[in-house]
Length: 541
Image (cartoon, rainbow, N blue to C red; front, side, top):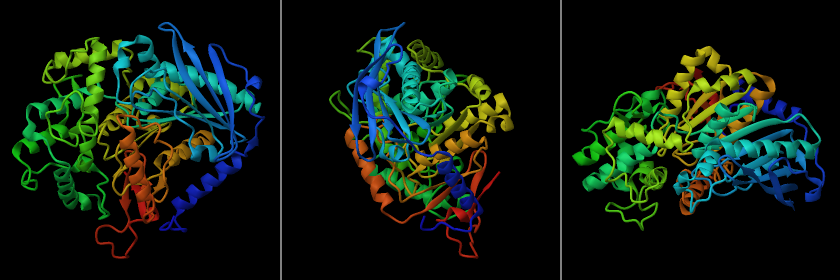
């Protein structure tokens, strides 16, 4: 890393840990790629075995597991087995509605991981189409059963292929893939040794409620819609005021919870526009379980994608993202499906101020297989010795980061802070949007946290911190981010990520909550320390 301090003890420790990982995971050669040599596990059909030579030599197995009761349903999967194996297996769980099988990533193949992925048994028109929720089998397979049965089958194939009983197993995903990863940790703690779950929704209400409330308000009050250009102006005002609040002027707000929307500083917005921003920040709170957190305000320019859309209302049924909010499309298709009523509309048939209506929506979702998360259900993971890393972008514009903050606080109540930290860590990534992309953010977070989880599982020692950086393209999540991204949006976001990776390198010290990253130079920075060097930061708290 260009700005890395070679004398930094933390950086030296990270390098030593990674070196140890490499030494402890000698790559082992695998047998040839021949379908006849693979034995299909129970309820599993193997369709093909194909040899590839890029980016490394590997064998790809395609197949499916048949689920029943409810069912039958076909859960398709892919398993990539590199010729040179590092003794580890990773299941990449995609987001959104899933509905297709992601390809293996070059980074993980090059590092020697056996890689599994699945469509979760879902048939959908696109990643935003949640109409499958009217099918009990697809709903259950999407929630957690699909990943469970594919994990069992592909791990059995992997062990047999490499002739080993020892396999360090990891699951990782973001957005709906984060939901799937946490579902696996709560429901099937023996399936993996380490779980890396990002940007999931863990609150009492369904996330479609916050997306639906915002959209209904904007449709009913078109004057509240905010242009992309004005959202950029809002972000600049907020950054100018709060950049130094965390002790460093570095173009980032590391702790967005300190932000208060000030009407006088946003005087270029109309009252209806300011009111809708306030609604977005406050979320839903109609008492008790009728609650969903609002969004953090460090980077509101990102709200165009999920919350406002590129064009003002009215919006017609023919409109699709990015013209209309991505969050609305998910909320609309899902709400119709769970009610089995294609004429139902959250815009006209729902009262977002009614706790009764909000809780009834949640009951309908749970009846359709939706997971109800709570750390109490992680006792099995703790007892099995498994490890869980939770993370989110602090500028996530799709799933409020407070989901992970509240879940971690609840885990402290269940296990005590010390008990929780023995097997659960949470990270908040400054400037990062939903799963990928962002402003002045690190671009290698998924792979860095996978490395951290691998070290934790291998050594039993929890990470003190992790160092992420810009300057690297991230190919780990593009196929998994789902979460409402159209192909065009994914292409735009990955192009933006590539442009950022071509810029100056910066390293970031990410500290496990409740610790915070603090710049050693302070605001005055009398020694002229480089704010872009993680070695000049420390964890406090």
